[in-house]
Length: 267
Image (cartoon, rainbow, N blue to C red; front, side, top):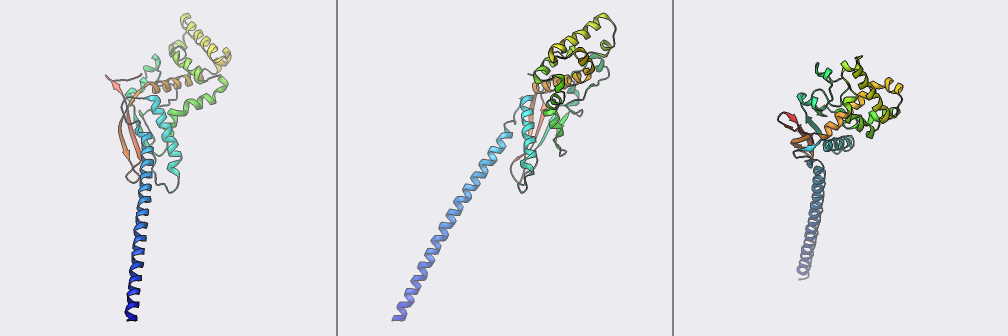
């Protein structure tokens, strides 16, 4: 009788232990499932917030000034998060198609240059008509977004600033003259060149000798700033957004310059 009672007590104890372990296991699974869902929810929120920074540009009629903001955002991302070890994040690729036939809409080309279809000074836009970083380098993005700032810093002795360059770009036809006017001895053309000297004196606060010795630099940065402002004024359409299959993050964005009747649209 005692043995039977002991056996029943042992069996009851085992059952209670099994029930406690089962309850603990169920509780652990529920807690684990809760934290997994919380983690997944956090990851989804982070992914949504990340993608929204770029998906905001997934639309038509985007101003060039906004495109510059996007390129700066892509540059910052590629220089920081992409290179963090263990993230598995891909670089973000941007491709902005302008088209070689539309480049003249962004550049100031004098009548004498139009004859040969040449642009005299180093351009901030690639001659291919496509701005992209798909080769693994963000140099073309840097050229569009930062070249003007670099030129201003490198030519601080000439008194150039963003404000002054706005004035020069607005009067670019009086600064970058056709070759025929530059070389002409006609009185009218001489007065045109004098008008340029006076404009530069008043804007940059330089002497005539300083202007003459640095004229090519001044013309170069004026042309580049003109390009920069034209790019900021242009409209672009987003044609495609691609996502990384592993992370779900935006990994590529494609744009085209907006045209109307074959002409680039500007605001």
